[in-house]
Amino acid sequence: MTDDKTDTPETAAVDITKSSAEEAPAIDLTKSEADETSEAAPAAETQRRGGLGAVVALAVVSVVAVLLAAAAGYFGWQAWSTRDADRARTESVQTAKDSTVALLSYKAETVDKDLGAARDRLTGSFLDAYTQLVNNVVIPGAKEKKISAVAQVPAAASVSVSPKGEHAVVLLFVNQTVVMGTDPPTNTTSSVRVTLDKVGGRWLISGFDPV
Image (tube, rainbow, N blue to C red; front, side, top):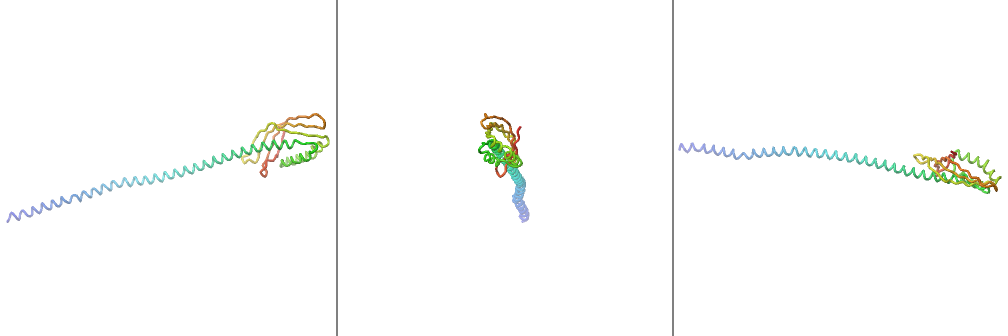
């Protein structure tokens, strides 16, 4: 009887120890969660850095887009300015040639009409000076002495054009043949610096200076 009573507590003690051992997996679970938490921290940091990197990349792309747009606008404007200047040079040179021929060419029989039409190609103070000259000198002399003249422009070159294409200077080489009555023709050669202004969409001569 005594032996049986002694065995019972020992057996119970063993059972308790076994139960404690069986609870060990619960401790392992706690360690596993801690490990998961440790692994999650770098992942969160990586995600945060990735988000920051995306924001920086977007900002860089935006800046590059703005710079490209600005560059495209500048080169577009530059190309437009170049085309505009080239067109102004071409137009002013052609106008200078045509208008000079009109100013210096006339027949004795039609001098009023010829030189009157030429006035439409002029502007500013030069228009006034030319009008006075032809009315007081050229037309009366052409009628009285039967003078006719023919002008040609064998060469022309653009000297300058304003940035906005509204003012130009052209250098011309002019040949003029003058016939007085029944006398032999007289040939003269000269160089002229022609100044032009664009008025109402038309190139008009505002200066005519021998050089």
